[in-house]
Amino acid sequence: MSAEQQATGLNAQLIKVWTTWGARFLPFSDVASAELPLSRLLRLALIQVSVGISLVLLVGTLNRVMIVELGVPASLVGVMLALPLLAAPFRALVGHKSDTHKSAMGWRRVPYIYMGTMIQFGGLAFMPFAILVLSGAQQAYDERMWLGMPAAALAFLMVGAGIHITQTVGLALATDLTKSEQQPNVVGLMYVMLLLGSIAAALFFGWVLNDFSQARLIQVIQGCAVVTVTLNFVALWKQETRIPSRLRPQQLTPDPTFRESWDLFVAKDKTLLRLVAVGLGTLAFSMSDIVLEPYGGEVLNLGVGTTTMLSALTAGGSLIGFAYASYILSLGADPFRMASLGAFIGVPAYGLIIMAAGSDTPELFTLGVLLAGLGTGLFGHGTLTATMQLAPKAQVGIAMGAWGAVQATSQGVGAAIGGGIRDVARGLELGLNVAPKAEGYVLIFGLELALMLATLAAMWPLLQRDTAD
Image 1 (cartoon, rainbow, N blue to C red):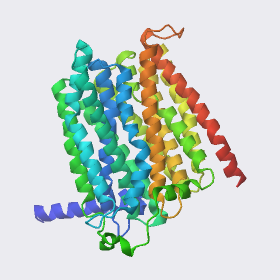
Image 2 (cartoon, rainbow, N blue to C red):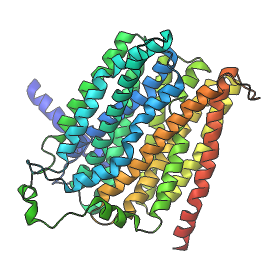
Image 3 (cartoon, one colour):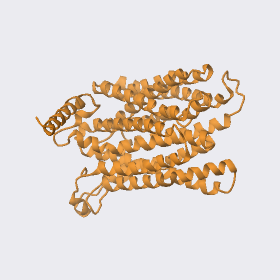
Image 4 (cartoon, one colour):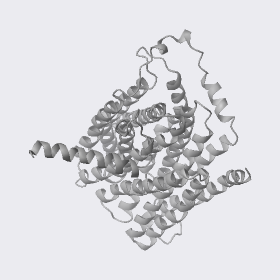
């Protein structure tokens, strides 16, 4: 047998193993069919991979680098990371517009994803230079602040807006390609790919930036811009079918307005209460997002590479939680009970993180971060599934947009509050039995514990209603 024949046989065997075992163990891969093969779904999921890369860069890596290495105040970093929330409330509107859009090419989703991709690319392209100018102005307190601050704010806003647009419309496109009963599973597959992209990005950033320099930071951020465009363009190739009838709106039934679609969505029982619970729980899990890595660096004396790995650990815990939740929910479990379990796990998670400050034990910190990621995965899956189940027919897009808008807004508010508390409480004598530098951080983690308990209390009426039904 020739080498070429052996290679062909090996490739065929690998493909057989992937299609058999991969489809069996990869979460939500059972949505694949002859009309929509798994390879096409995974290619579409590259949009979520690019989103995961950008999120790790913003929340995981840049906040540590800006605060510790570049000396930018945490409150200012928190505001920068909170700027994307200005675009978050429009996610439901973007989803609705992509549902009813009529382009010259006969597409609905593709034009919005392309637009979001280019906005995200533009923000990443000039972000490193804006950050460096801002950090230099902070250290010298000179006029460069008036150039660096608005430039950095615009860069963060553009990246955040691009993420919101591509993620919302990308998930809507994924649901378009599947049968209605399989749409929640396809969204789950997209979310798992986002977590995998986050893990891979965190590992790569930790390796590249272990020997930190400003030149390397520029290369990493601009490299992410190129990767984002490449992944999204590959993901969209021949995914959405062109429908010429979309070019002739006068022949179609008039589309509902956003207000009409929104009123129909919120008319479902307990919809607003569920969205409130989503916002409260997300705030509880996200308030420490921008301070976990600085906490590891300042209090536990961990290096840049080590603290960047925390993003991979958090994403890994979320992936475990999401896989477990998908299995249990497929058996008919109540999604809000699963979300409540995630909030319940968050209580000991942040308790361990607080204990690490007093005992100077990085292992407690690591375990706490892992549990926080696990709780985030359970909570996110449960609330997303509950929201999907509430969506009226043909309104899956607006339901995902509403869930995403509440979640993203809560994450941004949490980042701003966390950064502000860290700066205000720094150096204050709060009477806590921890190192002076740790007191502001411990205050944040304690507030998150209180919010976890408030989240469980907010979910109680929903669980009681489900039991009564």
